[in-house]
Length: 466
Image 1: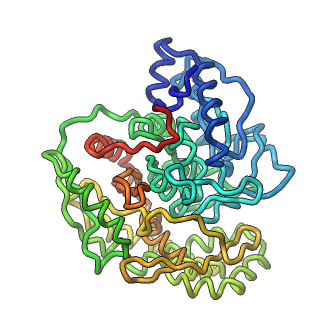
Image 2: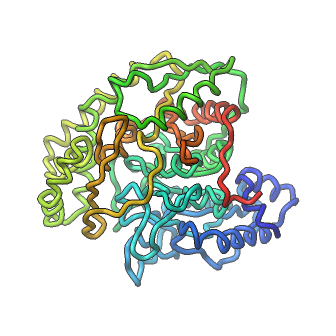
């Protein structure tokens, strides 16, 4: 069967399986053929399975999907991006994956990530560098870079990843595909961390796909909700605008946004600059870091946590908005943690009231356009430090702060986000936006994202079969 089946969207595959127009064996053969042809260049997979997909009468009809290799699937090796010859074989499946299995999906491979998902590029010693399908010298982003690259190149119809501070959004943006980060706590976070650990906040599993319709299909499986038919409803979208109240952005990203806004301004889409000072308040970054550092620090042995703070002092100086606050949280001070949780509620309330009359917000995923792959200055078992700086229209910003400036505030606020491809930069690489909806408003957000996607030009890299 032609590899062109690999380029179809998940919804189309399910429809054609349902009608009997396609045989599941042909679909799997197309994916395997595409993987054989492409993965040597892209390096998106930890492994694929030899198990046969079984056609069934469940809603997904045996649809082959992939899963980020930090998420447990019973009976499948689990590596977390580590260089280990012997990997664990979990007995349990993460709830988010189990929902897809119960709906008739089949996991045909695990996609790669940096060690413990702790970087915004995707590479590890065992698999190597995951490359951007638009230019293999460039990063695919991280930490769900394997999933985004696999979906973008037709090696996967749908990947299940996870996002803490940008791990779905950044790779989707850099690879020119879509992702859905659900409302915080809307999807069960079990099965994402070693030894059965669960973070109380921020860890959000979600899908990566090549269309909004595929995201809606995935969300219907995850939530049991069905997206209504798109209507002619008019939407008001608040835009990232006033530069004095937002993080710096490179000129290329600004140019893509400007063009996209012109394309999106239609009878049913009204776009206007929004006051985003409540989102980018310095207290937001401090609050996120305190909570994230406290909760992730609790997963580390105390000596490792202390060592990370001591050896990471210079890194924290280069990253005053991200690492510095995370390292502060590593103190594991319960009083400060509880204060941060209370502060989070206050910051969320202020943010929500600031755009009460709008339907959604559209901001960059990242102020940095896709960049050539970089190696860290130091790498201590996956705890990486980068001394590199990005020049964002005359403002020099360190690696971690530049890559999290737009994602961390949204993570703290807990809103659902659809990452939507907006266009290509001057290097021919994708730039994506975060379309932010109301808490619990995934269905309305997906409807709006579908409307926007119908107006914007589709992106298609050269690895995707015609």
